[in-house]
Length: 334
Image (cartoon, rainbow, N blue to C red; front, side, top):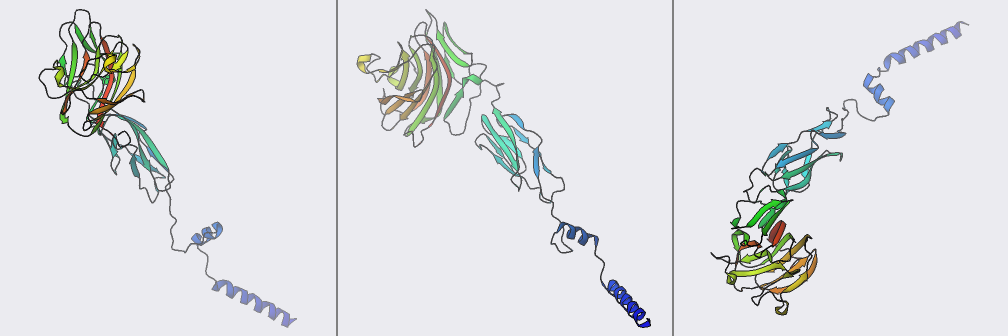
């Protein structure tokens, strides 16, 4: 009996000694063991960014203005709160690495804030021209001349006005409208290019409408002149008369002289385009995206284009222009 008690006592003492020898488990190890995370005792958990929010989701800016967006990364104690900024169209707005937006040109695009996990937040940005100065010529990157009359409240003062007597040029129903009533004089507006168009290929786009069949001059291009009634200074031209777009090579406006390009309807808007080749001295003419006239000859050869002139010159003539855009032609247009 004594031998049994002695054995039990010995085993009990051995168990107590083993328990004392084993180190106690720390709170951190208990948590990690419970989550089955195989990290060393001195490693720290990384808090990842989950989302990003912008303080503004819509902005309207004037050309040249600056605005700074504030991006909030969630959670606020994320270790990596880096935000990458991106403009949807850098020709309209640019954005710096701290979220400062600069309005470059008229138009609409987006500014995006993005974090490392791919989450992003977007602000819609609209850039408008300051219409408080209607004398300011519109400028847009990539264009030699850019004018959208639908954004005007008055006829731009930078245009040379030739509207005597009963002629009239006004901004009306979102367009420039030039009219001449019976017994009135001609009515024209003229734009002088900063630099003459001398060589190369150029694209001219315009939105036009004639409310009468009388003679209207939507796109007349002149070389250097002090007399805009000197037809000998007209380099190339497109007119609207008798229900037809016409081109005059110096032989007149009659169909027998090959002047007729294609028909138009009064009271209807048309989007027209000229691809002008200054070297070949011809142009292609498109109406609503369709080729209407090919390799139409200039009226005056060996001349640079210095002026664009548009208006009306017959009684009851009525011409409306929505926009005019002139730029260098792209490779696929030539």
